Length: 200
Image (tube, rainbow, N blue to C red):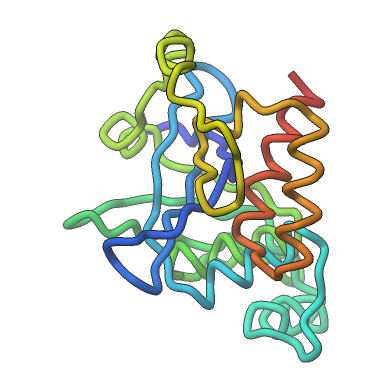
């Protein structure tokens, strides 16, 4: 039987090879802490990053509008489930509750995640899919790479690997800079690392 495994957003990385796209990195909440990435567009990446950083757009974005409609209709987004993957494309569903009735709506994974962060709804993936795409990040691998830490760390050369080895003060400095420069996807990645350290 397929189980649903809860995920959290652990970062967003700009894809240099595919301009205008980002890799949304999702990580298993417990267990093996497996992670995988979903390719998303720039507008969806910005939408997710804005909400994660509690920044507001001057006008409601599409996902703000969708969330407002759900709330106005007195419905509730219970959860988002990534339920299938075909040809490297993830398929997701929104589980809504309205007037005591359960409603399931098909959605792009990027839209589903953008809505989930706005309503604090949990994000899940079917265990069968995570078994295929999930990668375990070995902590020993970080130790071997210590010599590769650049002399000067900036937003332009920041990677997930470097991020995990930076002191708290440097993370805060980079976070402030990223928000100032409106590099919201980078800010989200830094903020997630800071939150992870607080709870682990």
